[in-house]
Amino acid sequence: MRERQQQQGNATGNSSSGSGSDSEVSGGATPNFSNTVNAVEDLDWDPNGNSAIDGALSGISDGTLVVLPAGNYRLDGQAQVSGNTIGLAGEGYNEASGAPQPGGGAATIFAGGEEARLNFDAESGLMANLVLDQSQSKGGISFVVRSQGFVTARDIRVNGVLTNTGSSYNEGTNNPQCALIAESEEATARVERFVSRGTGLPGDKRQGGVPAIWVGDGNKGTAQIVDCEVQAATDNGIYGSRTSGDTQIVGGTYFNNEVSQIRFCGKGSFADGVTLGVDADNYSGPSGSFGGFNEKIGMQVVKVEQPSHISKPGGAVLRNAEIQARSVNKMGAVIYVRGHGGALKMDNCRVTNNTDQSSLLASEPGSSYDPASPPPHNITITNSLFQGTQSSDIVKVEGRPQSTVTNTCFQVAGASQSSLSGITVGEGVGFGQQCQAGLSDPSKVGSGGNVSSLPAFNASAIGSNASRSAPADRQQKGHMKNIFDAAALVVLVIVAFLIAVPVGVVGLGGLASLALNYILDDD
Image 1 (cartoon, rainbow, N blue to C red):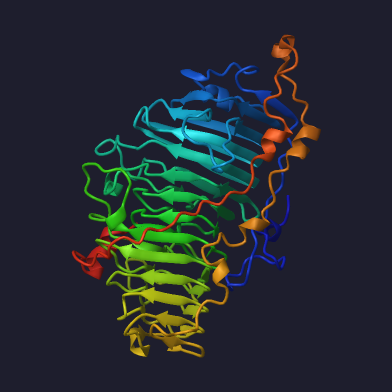
Image 2 (cartoon, helix red, strand yellow):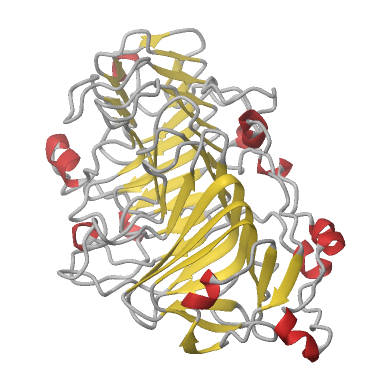
């Protein structure tokens, strides 16, 4: 097993310190499968969905890559895929989109009951090229990436709207669509190019809506979230703040998700090259009986918080981020550091705020329902650009000494130094529409960060090590059909999902007070 700093891939070879320097998420070890089998031809899985595959998933042999031809595979409940080295991959990959599309020849695992879940547990593992469908049962479908070493889930798409909510569903029992658990400090769990668009009903967070990506107490190591796309989730796009380990977000688009687009905390956690936005006037997701988008649940674009049971120091980093707040109904702030959130460093970020709330609000440590998180608590803004229509309280920092802003432009009509409070204004800070300071590298903003450095999956390693033999009781079928050779695997390439954030019409009315919003958007 490699050292943790190598798995995190910091360009300097050191573990991520939260200093804001460029870091690089590495590609991780290629699983060395000793055997590759066809789920239908060799294992008799039902591609028509008449028979559940729960037991078959739990029976995959260690060292095996199971390939699913295009079809519909039924998952009724909780299934466990585990081994030291294990793989599960669909054949129907759509290179043009970068992730499987619903239908059109994709390998689809659909929920046959109210709550289906695939637990993928390995030291070295790959789960790839699958559509997870919840449209037939209207119940949820989800997956867990659990790692004792380095495990990757890539090119996974959730399809269908979870509508079976209400009295039979609640936050305590409903599962987030993707959960990442690195079980030790040396381990890494990664999800790449995960796509979820409009899979829940707005306003039903309290009745069973779920986050798209969750990093919680079980994660002790590094959770990496790379080039994912989440739109119109009922809960947080990324809920990554309840972990003693690190949440590292590289690239991707998170847009019009309720509560927050991304949520993270602490030294070692960062978001780099992300595109984040909210525009309530142009919400295009599903609707239901729980209220409209952003009507019941207050939101932020970015939230930093750290619950009291997590003891790591503050020091989250937000860099190269494109952040847009076009219109909202209920919002506390575009970027909100809670009273139990530690330090935050922003670097080379562009924030466009057309709401009447602060672009950045950092509450005094200890002022919220949890005690103050461990220090440091200061807010640092460098090489950034703030624009839009909001000119009062653009940055509001409460009770956080040593907070500073340098080399940053507040390119807003009517903005002045009085638009900032609780933060020391240093060199290179300008105000007004003619301000020329700001971004140190505009080309990196929202560009996917350093995701281009990620290596493609090493297909040749599988080709040279896999015996491709069928199980002993299936040898009479002869050579299995070569449907998943190296050429098919090579198409697992890096594709970033970036969408244009619609401008829309600025919605300035109907905003609740900050205190009320903080209660509404809680947890």
